[in-house]
Image (cartoon, rainbow, N blue to C red; front, side, top):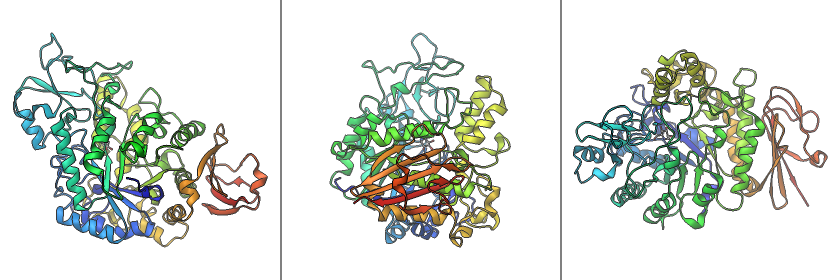
Length: 570
Ligand code: NOJ
C-alpha cells in the first residue's frame, strides 16, 4: 500500500453493545449505529472501527468469536451490516473491523472439532499439550507451563476427555489458535478476504503480536518468570513479539492486502517496543500501517498491580516523546487515550470534577490530536464522559475485573477494598457504560434495561446538550479534527518536545516548511506561566485554537488550558 491516506485521518471506535440500542433489548446493535451515523459525520471523523459484532458466546463481550463470517443476532445480521456499510460509505466514512485471531471461542466449530479427539484433523489448530512430565494430568501444578491467563487462573485448561491441556492466554473460552499450522493461517486469510470483498476497509488486529509462540523444537513451551506474591507466572516472554511474528504479518499482507487500495490496518500490540514498532510499520516491509502501543497507558502502573501510582507528567512525556522520535522517519504512530479496555481519560489523566471536566477533556484532546500519528477517539470521549461510580464488585460485568478480583482475593491475599480501589480507577467497565445520547431515561441508549448501568451523570453529560452548545467538548473535538484535515503541519510536521522535565505543562512544536505550531497543555488546576525557550518569538503568533479564553498575558495558561499557536517563518 503506497497510499498513506490514514495519516490525515481520525478513527472513531464504536463498542457496539454500549453505543445505541435500536430494538430495546438493553444491548446496543448495528441499527443503533446506523441511527447515529450523523453524529460521527458531524464530528468529522474518517473511519469507524467496530469492536467485534460476530457470533459469540459473549464471554469476553465478543472478543471470543464462534463464527468469523457472520453477525451475532444480538447485533443484527449480514443484511443490516451491509446497510451500515452503505450508510457509512455514503457519508465518506470507512469501516474497519476487529480481527480477533490470536484465539477463537471454544464454541467455534474449529475448536469443537479440535477438542473432539487427540487424533482429530483439527487437533493441531490449537495448542494442545500433555501434563508436565512426571505429574498426573489434571492435578494442581501439572499444567504444561506455569503461565497465568490475563483474566486470572492458569493459561491452561485441562480436558478430561482427551487427557491433555489447551492454551488460553485469555479466558478458558478463548483457546489460542496455533499459527504454526499453515492451514490455520490460510483459513484466517481467506476469512479476511471475504470481509474486504464485502466492502470493509481494513482491520484492527486484536493482540496480534501474541500469535507467534516461542515453541521449542520438541514442541514444548518454556516456563515464565514468577513475580513475588503471584499465583501464576508471566509467560509473555514466550509470546509477545514471538520469533515468527514478522513472517506471519508479512505473509498476511501478501495473501490479504497486496493489491488492495485505501485500507487501514492497525495491530494491537501490548508490550511492543519502539524498535519493533518501526519494523512492524515500515511501509516498505509490508506488515501493518500502525500499532497500538501501551507504554503511555501503563504510565500509572507500577510493579504491584494493586497499587495506584499517580501520574508524573514528565514520565508521560518521556514515553510519548520516545515514540514520536522513534517513528519520526520510518513507520507511523497511532494516538489514543481511550478505548474499551481503558478507564476514561478525563478521570485518569484529567480532572473530572465539575469545575475542570470540560476544560481538561478538551486539553487532553488537544495534546493527543496535535501529536504526529493517527488519532483514535473512543465513543463518549468526544463528550468528556467519565469513569463510573462503582460501589462494589457486584457492579462490574467485565470478565477481567471479576477474574482478577477473585484471583487477588482468593489466591494472592489482597483485601477486597484494595482491589476495588484499583478496579474503580482502572477497570474496563468504566469505558463500557452506555453512550450518553440525551437526558431521557437510560440516556437515550435504550428503551429497555441496559446490560450495564448508565453513568448517573448522563443528565448533564450527553450528546444532545452538547450539539447545542458551541463550547461543548463535542464541538471542540470537531474543531481539532477539522484542524488536522486543514493544516498539513498537524499531519506531516516534525515533532519537538519542549520542557521535558516540567511536571505541569505538556509542550511541543510541530514544524513543516515555514509553518510552525506551538502546543501547550496545562495538566494542573493552577495558572502556570509557560517557560518556553524563546517565548518572546511567539509574541503575536496566531492563536489557532484554545479551550479557554486567550491567555491574558503571553503564555500564561489557566487551569487545564490548552493552546495551539501558529506562525509562519519567513
Ligand atoms: C484485547 C481486547 O481489546 C480486549 O478487550 C480483549 O479482552 C483481549 N484482547 C482478548 O481478546
